[in-house]
Length: 124
Image (cartoon, rainbow, N blue to C red; front, side, top):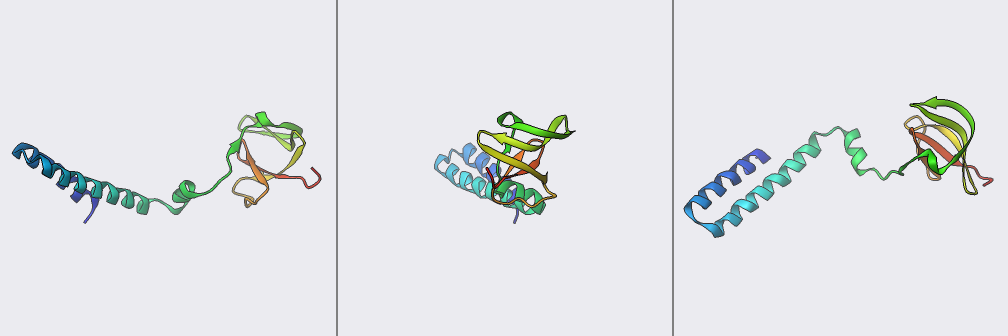
């Protein structure tokens, strides 16, 4: 059985019980509708690509804007945003590692707009 069966069934039960005046039985149609919604969620999750599902359940660091940093050694512009080799925030120095997806994300790294990974320098 799929979710459409339960969702259609709950609609029919709601109409029949409402027209017949069986108000306490409307709780049964509500229960059937909840089962249908639960099954619909499971069907949608099963139909997603593994990469899409990983985006929802992955524990990622936030994508930080450049406003928090002071950049040094401008390399190029990517998507209209300057890319610096070195970023400084207060007394911490970060060094460019590479683009997100090309370099594995490790502890001690941050993500900066436009999707670049920086690693904290050991001397800072």
